[in-house]
Image 1 (tube, one colour):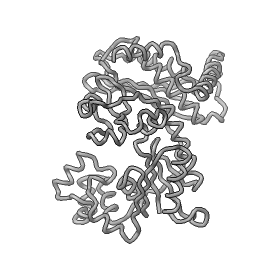
Image 2 (tube, helix red, strand yellow):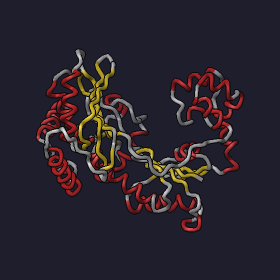
Image 3 (spheres, rainbow, N blue to C red):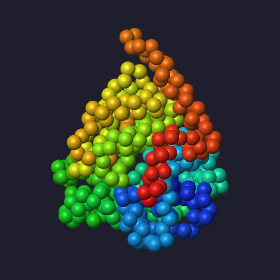
Image 4 (cartoon, rainbow, N blue to C red):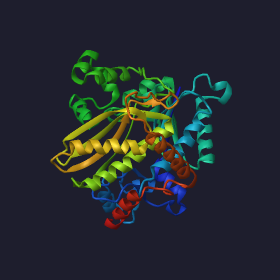
Length: 393
């Protein structure tokens, strides 16, 4: 049996945990801007029809007394690590799939922790006592059904699909609830008369593959009660990135540079947290007509320094500043190498300690932020950017 743990309205719940005045009130996490969207909505806000990815202006129309809280990424990551640490007390087969959800394979755990249901109840109790938040748990013999089950009885729910119930459940499962079925695929399936996962069995595997490619084959297998996906306890990060949609389209280099600086700070901090260095820096740009370009450079010495990442991203911006205004900009780092592997030196590169010095400074700043909070120390230019954003709001 596989468990899927899903934290309830995670970002909004963390905000209510940190600020008791928000408890019981309609709260959304997101940026108050022309293009701001809801990252998470409390259950009180959801009663008004507000949901994640909804534009902030639309959410405000639905609820006049809506409380909008700016996201604090570092805090959510901190709470997420606490939750994942609890899950790993029960089994090493834990696969985090996002900041607020994870799969667990609890085979061979009964002697230590009891049945899958007992394990789920213990996890819920421990998270509630130690993290002060609630989660919903789905239990099923198949991974995709565990995820669906966790959503059946939210918040603070527990749902179990037993092996002898699988085929009956599949027969009536709305096809739109199957992971991977987006709006476009849903309309195509509906046009074929497919409304439940059980309806898939009316079609051959070959015909579904011709119509939907690899996903057609997966749908066929899921309809037969086959899910080959396993719980993989650890997948090494291949890249780290940060991006943001701008409030207004712009070609102002000063504005763009400040966004790149903030994103380089985020990327560098994440690299240092996971103990990796990057060999390739990437700049992503989406223009006002939604045309997208990416530019990358390979640096001579892998780094986890926010300053070095910023310098390289800035050079890329100088080289590829497009003629059209920019609506989205982002910075990424890839070609990751563990920081435990010695940095290979370039014999022909000029000797410099800049990278090492910046990394030392970054680690000191990280330590201060961890002890006193993410807002305790920031670059002056980022503080100026935040002040301007507040004034505009």
